[in-house]
Image (tube, rainbow, N blue to C red):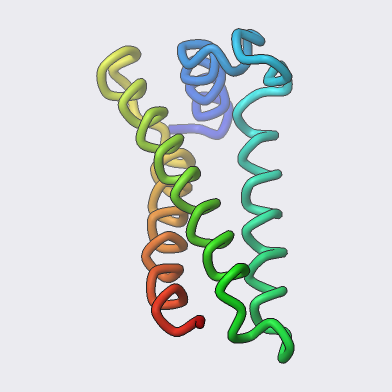
Length: 115
């Protein structure tokens, strides 16, 4: 699948979800922008958790877990739309789903370690 075909598929999924059409308040910027913001937030939380004074913070670990859980849930919804509504798969979307799934799995041990 070419890059242009992938972008058309992402737009179709976004339109099917209501995100790109503005059905959700403040969501007119589209799925890709939400993804960039979400991944940037996860990166900031992960870097904050590496700081010596926050390394054992339960709050940072919990925020990272909660944010990645929201990402997994939203990704599952978009993946459902790919399968059930538009009957097409986007490689970029599946790659992002794998990444957010790994981030979520990696956040679980942090909850146990933090006190």
